[in-house]
View (cartoon, rainbow, N blue to C red):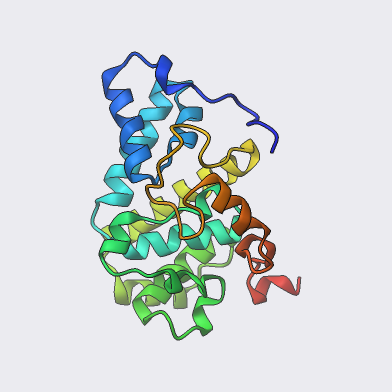
Length: 219
């Protein structure tokens, strides 16, 4: 595939020990993977802004991590960010989230895979991602299931990951190009460059399927 639209910073040229350690963590644990951080590394403040936000808001924070992970992949499937959509949170997997749990995200409200709390969070992510009206019914639903701190964190996280994913989609970056040989956080079938290429060629590859929700597709 063509190279990235902005060059990767080669981690072997980095002098800052803390940044080196963060690159190593990205390769080992993913989300984010090292390629996206190798773009941000052109501006160390940007590199650390994202790394710290991701740690404090996504991996930790006050809201349920698995709900934030479902929202993250909902955004990926909505904006067609393949780079982000082919990653999985190791923490969420350890907490019981399975690959099948990602399969109905675009049509979450009609799916039996998600409980009412998950559906409320995904409706929040949907409203933010698709610029849908946020009426009293949506907010009553959200306040029923989440505290105000949780609503702040989930909303902020959706906004951050949506903006990042829309940006990364334009950069033409791909996995297994920086610190290759590791598979931390990669989805099943995407663990190596060869497996990734095969999975993307499959007829049922998620990015080949129209991601727009039914309420939007008729417009």
